[in-house]
Length: 484
Ligand code: PLP
Image (cartoon, rainbow, N blue to C red; front, side, top):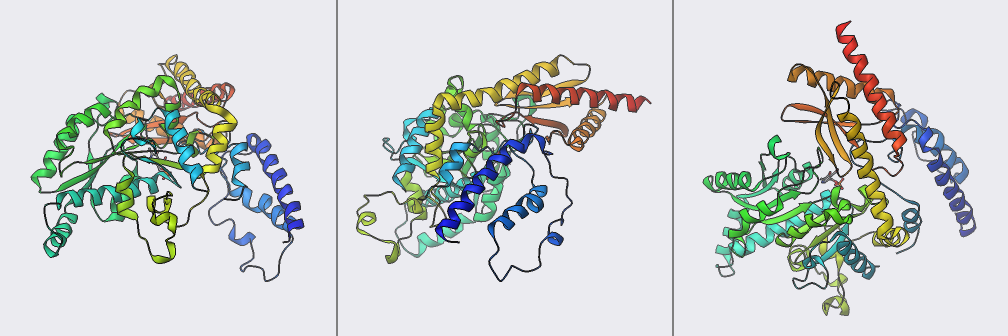
């Protein structure tokens, strides 16, 4: 492809993308092809000769698209959104820079009301970096937490064999912690790092949020086994029900360890709900972060920034850099040696990196904070509207967890726990089989609940009303069927 052909094909691709976006509401939200559908449609081997781009584009529509689940559909109320926007899509087309990332993440931290320790110019020498996913961000900060902990625990030993032996002994005792509601990425990070993982229980009484006393009990149990807890993921907006852990309670429980060799690194995972901090009423949730070590959220989930973009901030960049910096001669230059530039390669696992800050910066400028606030508020309001409708039918539904950050969970009513579970699961399967909406479910403390997330940009009140009608109709049919 030469530059002329590129111009032509790229312009066509833009038209195709725009056509696609216009067509999304009329496409089935979930693909209905069977696994393995694609292989018979494609040649067994890659072509030897170049093919015209028009043929490739036609195959994308006829062969690839039928296998796609449309995450931007107004019927997509499953998981959490994976949002995109026209400004971010345009920014993704631009060629590649580091300094913009520092500026964009300082803007973002201020917009979320994060404490100043996370700003690049703050007293604790912190700052932010963009990773591809929250899982990657959590793994990365866990590496920094591990090395910080091991260094503090062995600081009294002189360099040498004894120190090395003690470091390896301690490594085998390390435990990373997360609540029962923490996303599985924390457990996975522990698995990748080869450290133990322990779960702190949560309960319905406290809205499934991690509480200080439960954390204290888990720490006592670990101490009795001679284990070394070094890291905790606290969550702002758990994946199943958007619970917000008790940050002040966690900070109080861990306060006696701060500044000692047993200090526990607390990472706050706000992958989805971090975007809600754009709203003034949620800003108080950000203040307790000053007691913690790192924080992440995914603008690609709810903040209209095309996948992938996961922002992570640390209060002290030195911990990341000392855990991850490797400086072979071929990567050194006068600026990096003189610490005049930020080498983001030392804040992440890969060496190479995408220019993700551009789309974040373009989104921030194109929508402005007011535009982004309006988008987030719309999701919140729609979810509250659904909650109101559900509460008006207590004969059919119970709101399991209320609308929080555009997510609620619901159950059907029934005579026994067992019946409620069976009915709720049956309704869930029926709605998804209908093809108009796509929802996800969860099971907490043995209770099956349907999750509805109204954060996708295309969702409007009419879709929420339609979903409610579908829920009512489905439930009435189910109950009638039981009696018939
Ligand atoms: N943390 C939370 C709270 C999540 O809800 C999710 C995914 O939904 C993740 C982490 C993982 O995100 P990622 O796919 O960016 O790794």
